[in-house]
Length: 151
Image 1 (cartoon, rainbow, N blue to C red):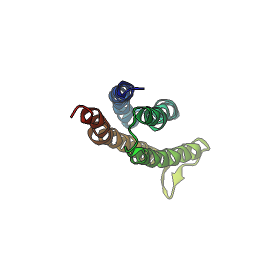
Image 2 (image 1 turned 180 degrees about the vertical axis):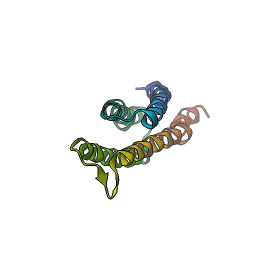
Image 3 (image 1 turned 135 degrees about the horizontal axis):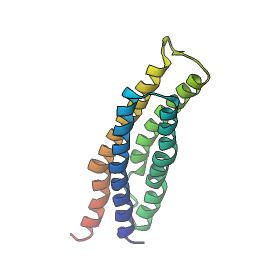
């Protein structure tokens, strides 16, 4: 397996970042104007399907491709750490939504709908930061391995 497979995965991930950030912008706009259980379900579906698969590709497929390309000293754990932070926010968001759907109206003395919006926004902001970190630090760090082979 060559370094080309690594580049293919990084290109795919970067393209997905663009698509997902557009979707996030749409969700953020709609959270302000049209909060509904349907919108929340749509956001959770996006997280459970698109974002979870995206993270899986980074954690599994990219890791395997790096190993097959002979790149063993890249710190994949640093990349995965960002996913753990996102997972914690997702867990909290799902808990709030579960309570909301049971008819609970407050969380720690605050309006639960506002807390759901706040937590969804926290997830989106953290996701944007994570994508930026990947594109500006992790991915270029991986790509430098290819350049070093020609020096």
